[in-house]
Length: 202
Image 1 (cartoon, rainbow, N blue to C red):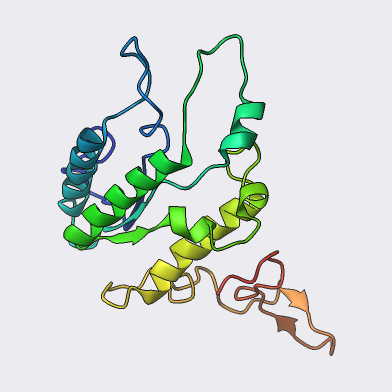
Image 2 (tube, rainbow, N blue to C red):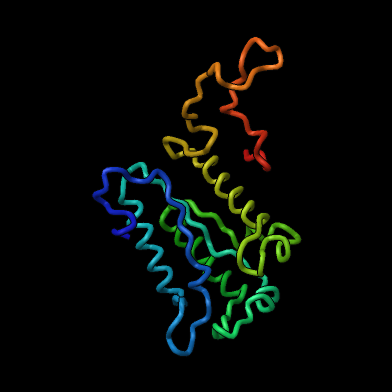
């Protein structure tokens, strides 16, 4: 943590989004190798990460993302490999790690996105949210963005607010070099336009 976020840095981040749990929740390999992290150690690691980030500055805000669900059947058919040993991942274990993350964040008064439950609000989540049963599709990624934006918008105790609509727009002044209006006698300032976005984020 000190290497990635040194406490003596003259500039500290305004927002850090922390996501761990997916690989940690993979079942332990008999060799002792692999990415598995026992859940008690996972909780301890997440606590240390949170404490370090909270100590960076009074203005550093933190959002944790919990472990999302997965489609076990799709994952089994898409990850068969002669290079890797069998990777055992279950939705049940993802749920355990997600709940552990959410509980820790409540204990430490941290903002958290419960991805395990958020994804499953869609009836077709098992097919729509993943490319291979594990990695997120565009639809799955949109859910993550929507949930993060919801936290930013509702975090009324954060000063300054980090929701995009509350942030100042750089170089927002009118310019004679902007696009010309239909009247032909002025230009139109596009700095606040959102129509070019595929999804009109609130």
